Image 1 (cartoon, one colour):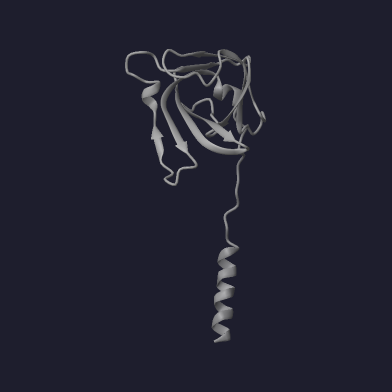
Image 2 (cartoon, rainbow, N blue to C red):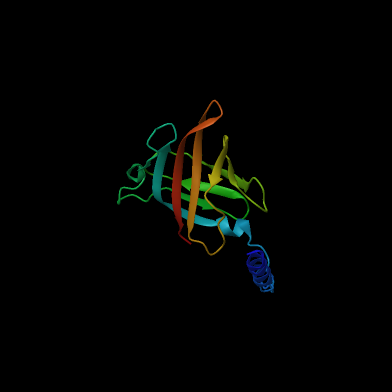
Length: 157
């Protein structure tokens, strides 16, 4: 019985040691500013109440999208400026100003500077060829996030 266990362990060690070598290069990292640069149009707006026992996500897109007027648009320029075009709904992004990331190499937050400093969680890093952008606005009460608004955008250019 001991010989069988030893043989099985030896066979496992032989197969585990036969992993293919990783070759090639990862290449240059994507330019994060180029990924954000462009015009983004709102396609969905959702809300999640984290205090609710039912962790449902409510679709509130109708507050911004009525099928007639142009939905909320954010335009991020490569020079670090941004502007907002809004005809319907509440403006959570200011009137325009400058923008940056919390960390230029590994961004987690989008920071907007207009008359106030606004900070939003990025739903993921956007590469220059990606066409979807998710931005989360988290409302806090005494240091605890209570509500999460998610703005989903598509690239227009």
